Amino acid sequence: MLVTKERLTARASAFFTVAVWALIAAVLVRIAIGEQYQWDLRVFHAAPAALENGVNPYEKNSPALAIPPALSYLYPPLLLYVFKPLSNLPYSTAHLLWFVLKLGALGALLLLWHRHFERLHVKWPLALFFLFAFKSALLRDITAGNIAIFEQLGLWAAFYCILIQRPYVAGAIIAVTAQAKLMPVVFLGLLLICGPARSWRPFVASLALFTVLLALNYVLMPEMSEQYLRALGSSNPNLDERGEINPCSLAMLRDAAAFLASLGVPLTATFVNSVYLLYVAAVGIAVLFAWLKYKERLSSVDPKLLIYFACVLFTLTMPRVKDYTYILLLIPTLFVLRHVKIGPSVPLLAVFLFLPPSVESYVPGLGMSFLRWLQAYSPWIIAWFLLPFLWEEIRRAAVRPLPVASREDSLDFRQPLAERPCA
Image 1 (cartoon, rainbow, N blue to C red):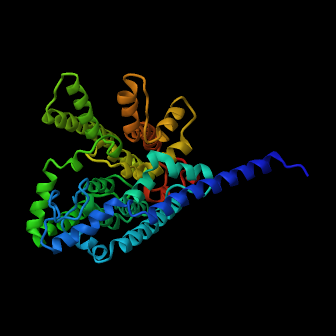
Image 2: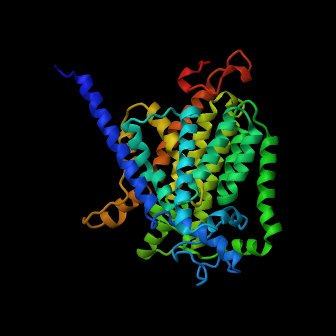
Image 3: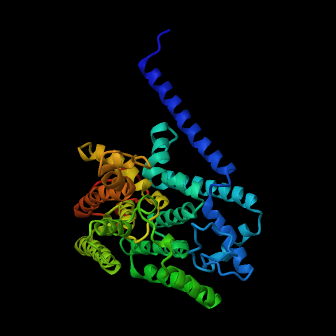
């Protein structure tokens, strides 16, 4: 009996799918059973116990603080009580529980993405994408044991509430989610531009909620709050991570300044920080100009496009964007890959997207400089690839003639893009 080409292709696809998922399962099992992984959990486990024993959890060099020397507790003091249940458990139990909770949050995140943003499936091309994209951002978070997946679940739940026009709920979720790392509060700006229900009221209410929740740290734990601010303003090396572990604009500028200093052109930290602020201001002015130009038409733009664009802007402008934070760009990147026309930039995007974690070369000047720089900051470079494509999609949607029907009834934002009526 002859085997058709289609059947051979199906069998090969099934084999690769099983192989990729087996690889993912093997990695996850290794993380689950190896207590050398999920190292950030050691911070969350030790910091509440330290406070209970009268030790300052923000004192990085304290011998009484059972936190690995390469790590620091840099979260608001009230979060110590959130981590307290973990601290009450033996570390081996907390390690396994944390791993299970992370997998549960990841499952919920994937389901949320699949149902309301981009359709997902289990076949090997998409499995490879989630396995390797942005240097395995998803697995990096699970391996490091950080809270990034929980943070992403909160943000994307808020984005979903924006899609179904529940701005107050969306704002409340963002306000609560941002209590850990603060910077995600900038996503409250989406309440001003997304959908027909956009207005200042949910934005102001959500910003007030964020401020009140953050202020509770100073009301309930004033001494620890002072220590928290002092830690953020210190020369803690964890706040000056660069390259592969923190591929962001500020880190790249500091690396560039260090390179120039090695050539005999020293630049002060104030100068570098000023350049960064000018860069952020330039991006902000460009976005403001675009908003003023198209603000009357943005209600007809699919909020998904605006959300994806905001995710890209976040990674391009924030002063600290850890490697696992690029989970934020997985769905915007998947959207772009599914809609971009094949051209010369597509293969280049693919190269950067799946660039391996390290690049070695014995060619003088390549291994230690340019290739290392490309490798380290490839997630940031990918974000610049995504930005113009998403902007063009938004611009084209904003300049279309509005439909005769009312704006509220003209588009169902929960439909996939391809199924929506065109004006």
